[in-house]
Amino acid sequence: MSADEADDGEGRGSGGPAPVRMPGREALDRPLPKRFYRSVSVGPSATSRGHAVLLDGRTARTPGRRPLVVPDARLAETIAGEWAAVDTTIDPARMPLTRLVNTAIDGVAGRMDEVAADIVKYAASDLLCYRADFPEGLVARQHELWDPVLAWAAQHHGIVLRVATGLMPVAQPADAAQAFARAIASLDPFRLTALHVMTTLMGSALLAIAVLDGQLTPEAAWEAAHVDEDWQIDEWGEDAEATARRARRFEEMRAAAGLTRLTAAEQG
Image (spheres, rainbow, N blue to C red):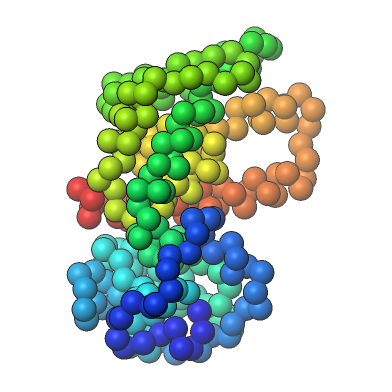
């Protein structure tokens, strides 16, 4: 965000929403802008319902020139904390909630149906539906971590998915997709963004919605999503580069889960 991306008005920019992608990914390749503001605060939005992040008393803006306004005061304060922590350069990699919220405002709010449909597509080939047939230890671990999530999804959301052994595609019942669509139909752009990010990071819409609903902690869901990988690590050892990449992805996962918690009261 540059100096002209803070304003005391809140008119929408003229550009359309950005494509749905991992939040802030494109910004990581640009030269980092310098910090241009002295103070960071939170205040009521001047023209819309919500809480604005203020830079020197002026409403901050997203890369798409939209006001940085969120529904929950706690979320606004947390985002403001990221801006206040900036030293000399504004580094999106160190501002995960800001990146997520920018994506929600610029890339998701105007295309909710498309993003929701993308999540439902993941459920049709969900990680939890494809099981190993050997070795016995891996099979048992998949059952231990995955079966309770499938049972919970069926009981609480009516999402009943077929499970198969191996990698051959398994056709899922049409009513399962419909049930998943109903389960996420009332989400606002912020929670839908978080759900989409968690789904793509884990390859499982079921694990993501379990985190969203508070059924699983982010750590438990992440462990369940990496059963196969962890089994291979135990067998063959750890790769340092892969471990570092996984740690970075988990930080994105934690930020998305944090966004769901900070907007939970508003949803309720």
